[in-house]
Length: 272
Image (cartoon, rainbow, N blue to C red):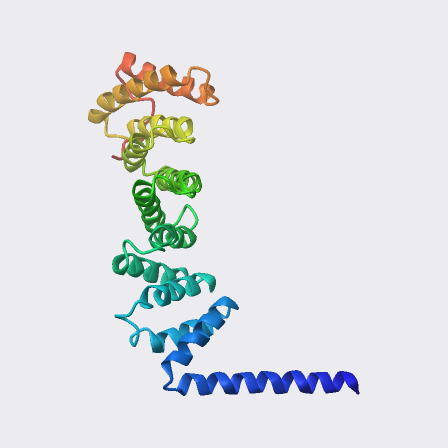
């Protein structure tokens, strides 16, 4: 019986609370709405906070309270994990209050929003690039911030994601047997990310792509392309003399060298 009483009491409290909030939304007392907004924000009730702010922000746009209200709005969307909206509001906040008391944190949080919506490596990395740009801007503008080390760590993490994206995109051409395109993509990736952790593998894939492209070329094109393969072989061996791909690399060298010495192709496949 007592348990049933408590259940009924809770329901009545919830219904009453909802009723009061609905009345508040319809109220024309903007000072009351502003006060309640702060209460909801402090209690972590971000949905109610943003609903009320939608109504009262225009009313307080040109007042001293505008900065704090806009800050609560951006923070509330971040608290709801709506990073797209939060990012938009943090960037708008920076434009409106570039030297306000929350300017430093707003710049960091804007970058954090892009960081949080950056997808896994194989997908488009526009948000990762935006986050890197945002963190770099933040570090340049606020070099004394306690968040500098965290920003550097996040930039490094994001850059590694870009490296992996570049590697996966280039490797896709190789996996699809589009060797000419693979050579171009791998070469571009190696130039852009010279210190890539995938460097050895990409250099091998490039060498093998050159070899396979030569092997399947028209006869009158093979000599030139096998020569490019041989040049790439020496570059690979200079950088990775003890490579895990040594057996395959040596096999490429033997076949390439045999063709160049004999002046005839190793393969009868001439379809390019």
